[in-house]
Image (tube, rainbow, N blue to C red):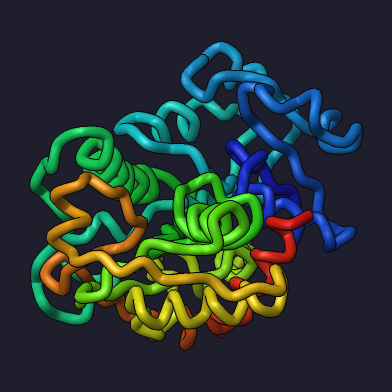
Amino acid sequence: MKILIIGGTYFLGREFARIAGEKKENEIFFLNRGSRLSELPEDIKNKTIVADRHDVSKIREIDHGYFDVVVDFCAYSAGDIRTLAENLSSGFGQYIFISTTDVYKRGSGKVITEEADFETVDYGGEAGSYILGKVALEKEIKELSADSDHNYTVIRPAFIYGPDNYAPREGIYFNWIIRAGQILSPADSDGFFQMSYVSDVAKVIYKCCMNKAAYNEAFNVCCEEKETYKSFENSLEEASQKVFGKDFVKVDLSVKDVEEKGIMLPFPLKKEESEYYSNTKVKEILGAEFIPLNEGLVYTAKEYLS
């Protein structure tokens, strides 16, 4: 299987590349701007096409033969997929787009399946642009598939955690524990969320590659467990004891205090800000499996120390 990875040098993209690269029959190429090229091993450097995805002339020059699968980790704005798909002269069979569960309309109060409505409200700032950009791209990839022989697959992860996570999530807590021996805890929070270990998400993406059951489908990718700040802190405590060899103090704050002081915590604080996503489809069709949070945080903490 010949795979073209768009991006692939950070977190989820890198983990997918590692998993796909374990199969000797796969030939993997990367397309990115080369900002981390000097840090990469020689075999990956030799398979990296250094180009901006928006540079049509460069995309048209790519000459590595037909790609069975394109996996796009860094499409954010309308036109990103179309520009690449329509100008990749070597051709491809399947296009896998990494989207997000944030594309769904908020506040329904229902379990969200893959058929739920998309968000239409612009919440402003980077987050608003990110959400509406992903929504536009989901519509774009579906239109492109309808107008061609290409198959598409959309992956919609919820919160992803794991080694080398660049999003300010579990790393914030590890830093607090190691440096200060304490964490901030929104004691009266009733918010909830779902988390998935990065390797589990990467394995789902790989299961989609050249898999007819995944053609022209979208999948929510997340654990079914409904985590809260309390359950997250319990798993964090277990990881801290096992890996850092220490307990930590919880500094209790009210949700009101957190909001008034502008403290940036990584997960929803209130029930009305929270959504619950069904993962039935990805488990039934692809056989996806997810490790529990306490186990995943132990793995992540070990990598954080190293």
